[in-house]
Image 1 (cartoon, rainbow, N blue to C red):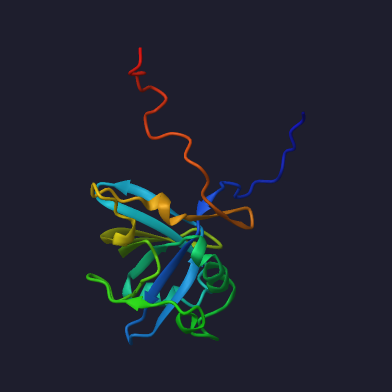
Image 2: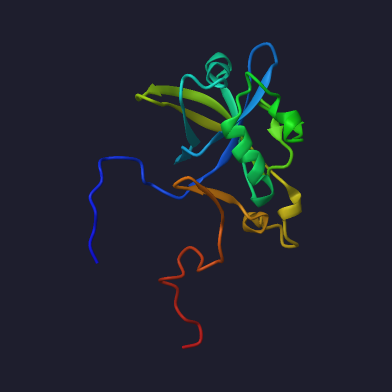
Length: 190
């Protein structure tokens, strides 16, 4: 079995495929798809998104310094693709995808009601990196859909069937293989 060497590129997959919702100062809103997103700090809780400056939503983030990351599920697969290929300059994605905007607590950008998790974010820094600019943001609030709370009060995100993006393809997450720390957990039967 051989290995090929390719030119440098972004092959860090899979990634979460999220809907980012934004608003401008006048109250216009939009949704767009982002796969270049991630957790960057736990205390304070911070995330990042990388956005091309020519994207319609880019100016909204620059203007308000706010956005909402909305996690997606199998049920939102069509919407995540649509919101990634259609521009808010041309269509109302909320209306076309029959998504429900909900007011947040800390930011003017709306939350997507159909999302199992919404992260209200305020930009703390922007880094112009080349084709994309990265917005570093503090998470101000996390909203979770109580349909995924179990009887013991534990949030069961995996029951929502989160969506990921891998090399041009949207995928649902698979079966559970273990939980954090299972590789070093002592077998209680011995």
